[in-house]
Image 1 (cartoon, each protein chain N blue to C red):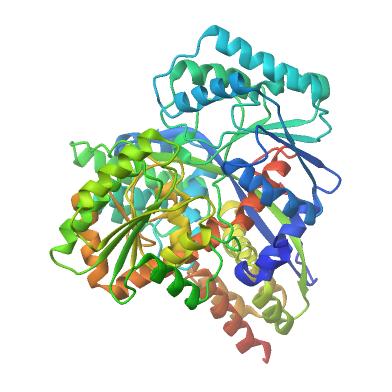
Image 2: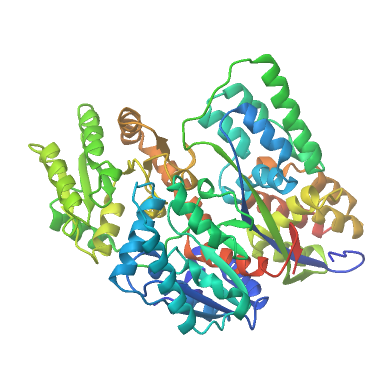
Length: 406
Length: 218
């Protein structure tokens, strides 16, 4: 696994040395992360990388996981869906059991952290222990809070307000809270299999294996087969463009086999693509990071035509590869793309088709967007920025005022 | 802190932790209400964020207000008025805020129609908490200064040029003040006159290094 200094050639040595400068101000402080799973999911993925890097920087970073059974995780799944706006019902028994499991965990966990950093709703009620064990407590919501179901959000807010600070991933997720709210965007790891530099031969080999012609323009959307990613809309966009400009369409993603809705969407997309040999619908099994990397690198233009999006880090992944990206202006995507500066933001199938035609026919302009996008990601959406924001967040717990001299 | 008198130039750096205010606007009227009420650190953040987060863009990146008015609300003339506010002329955030209020009030009095942005594209007011810390670099003369300037991060350059003058309300940027103390008045004047808002930060770094080198031999 790469160490912190391995990032210096990418972001510059001054960025790494300044991370050391900041972490020195937190010397001796223990940060105790708590979430609900050690494997799978975005939170576990980022903690797996973040904890060792923070330790390398000299911070005492640790990670604990709460215990729960199927009943508990079925309830937390309902909470998750409700936060995304789904009209689910959580009964008083559900809430009682949710609290019972949280309290059971609170009794078992040794809260040794100077800073206790709780991730997502599952362990949110551990904060009931705050008075007893002391320390600074932070809660981070990693999901989309744009349109949560009000009773569920009210319940969670009664706990969030007991923390010292809270973190959200996008400005639209801000709530009316009594405690400070901090904006920290997620990040990509430029040294992971999905984002690292690939030899041209690897890209060729993957594309050849998938039967895609590298000598003609390739338009790609990498997303799981989900209605909210609008894969059928992407096929429509392609059909409009194909009348005027020769290109191939690649729709690549996973997540369909264990999800009946996903299988249905996959069938619909296949149906929409019938008869066109230039449309490639590729189901990627878990662990296909090199394939995704190669597909993004081989693309002429990358699309992310989502109807709803938490943050949409696939946009940063494509921009990091200096690809021109056309994406819907939803969720965290407008943070990653400034329209006509570092990509294109669209609102419709027609608009997406219009800009796709333009970018395919104006490669110089498209390249400029891609290069600007890469710089934007380099400065704002790499793991090193994420670590810096966490260090600043921890420092903010100990210093008041708008300007702090360290 | 930051005492320059008769001593070497100590380099500092700064970082912003972005805070969410839970205040948003969907049209120019609500933007006006927001601009009037948010803390000054929010005005600062929205007029300077582009400089750091998009420092590779040139020329003249717009401020957040101008970007939103032009690209989201599509009110080009109002966006242009916001983009053309010469931030370098304002020595405090309060006077900059007043200028934005004046522009919006004037526009609203002349334009009775109101435009709402598409749902989800509202202007979200954010602010920032700034952390300033010393770097292990200092310079005793112009030659050393130029050498260090090549090594420091963009954040450090940003701090000495923008943060010191605008947010900490000093009369001139830190570099110009130190050049003056060294008796390099011509260089100090040139440094003071430089409009750092219309050049990328890397371009600015090169320009200052060249200016300093020219005067180092004098």
